[in-house]
Length: 190
Image (tube, rainbow, N blue to C red; front, top):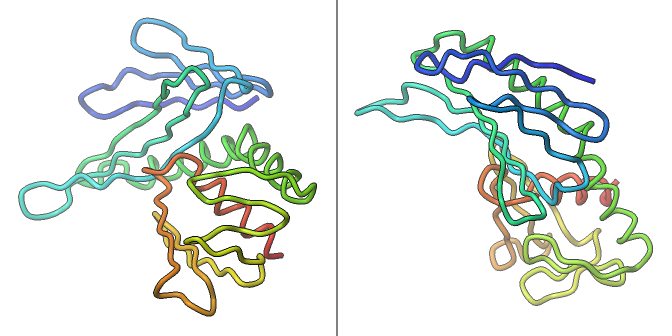
């Protein structure tokens, strides 16, 4: 079990408790305690949204979004403005992400990894996997023929022989399970 205290911003300074158990997590919203079971989580998105002022960036919005099997999303976020407690908030975000990896992301990745090794077909983010091959831009490729280029907020999948015409760009905060696909591809390439 891991516990975190989140203060969303200086405008919403109510301390909210996030408790991550082995089979669920609980988050204190304004009026109630929300409990999300691990089995109800189908996907995840996370990242940092930079908040722009008139001429320059004035803050960060740290976001973790769980996609649930009922079609809804559950969002945990907190902000910092003008570098107020920036290091503290960034460290909190990193610790929560590490706990979320242990809680559910690694299981999502391993589920797809086993499907790949058992030659089962599946689709993640409009990329098909079948017979230990990947369908990337209407071409079936072996994992050795695919490369990944990672950035802090996104990654690109492309065919090594034809990178200009085969790239597929995914964002960790916008695309559900982009981080799961990124981790799966890295694991398969090892």
